[in-house]
Image (cartoon, rainbow, N blue to C red; front, side):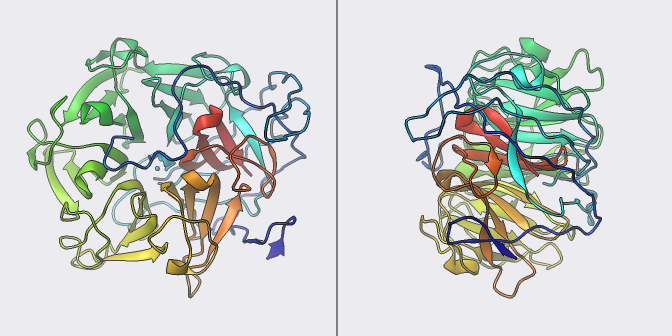
Length: 457
């Protein structure tokens, strides 16, 4: 353990079950983002159940470093000093993703009942920009020159690619992990509802992404109250269809996928041949059998609350993040009550318990339910057994030591002040982080209001 900087917090560095060395170098400060008149995610956006994040595990590729776009020296109103161009990390040592970010947030499916362990870097050294030049917009280009409208959800496809749910941009973007080329997989950019090929399709407020074993992408299309599927069997012509739900008809109904109803679906993950969905507006977790296409309720009564107990009797308020550990236990960020919940997979009743969070908004590092979060969204599990949380409205990434007696919560990266700064983990700044996943040699963060994908190594 080491104390970093002047902040009154302790950073606990993630260990490795399967050690993967990570090379790092000093990271220069990046330029402040330039925001257009387009939409951003409010740092106080916590209205439940309005549709508004996302992550499972497989090896990711060593990404070839790309030169950064030259950043013009800028001074932010918050006092960020004049800066040098953003430097890219010298190495992206392979590290599988964990169920993100996501948000995401989302990645290759977890085999049931024992997912593949997710290696974690032996130390968190600093934060850099992996993709996005900080302008709000839409540009497909090499990562350093690309632009995003609202990067929100993350998913990874083994060693090939990272997918980014560009939420208000209504597009699914793809980052090639070898070349770091950003491209658009699906979505016209116009909010709407249309099944079709690639960029002919339309989405409306995508909250989450995940993938199955075949590399198909699933999208929580919250604005349309449906779950979409992107068939990637022909990568040149990805086909978008509706997997479950009735477009434009929010509600709660189990049964055949085509007749089932959802309300503000959020984070998702695949375990075996089942797609689990944090159905935030319905205050429950749903399950979609990918073979029979039947929808059922996995956990939650649908009544707002924080009651622990058997899954069928437990209550949630706004479940928005979903991750799975090596024993197939589920971790859920309940953004509406600022707590982290757990569903015990081995227990016959899938017992729900509260892991961390006191149930009111705050920013407190402490053990378990003495800690405080402010609208936690993306969650991701590392092979060290620790849980990482995008504490969205605190603008930090938190770490929960699940092996400690008290399930100690610490700050993993970020100062707690919204802004943009690439540097050591204690000095780095985020602005409304949402999706999380392990890829590209570290923990990737969908830094929503900085219009970037960040990398913690």
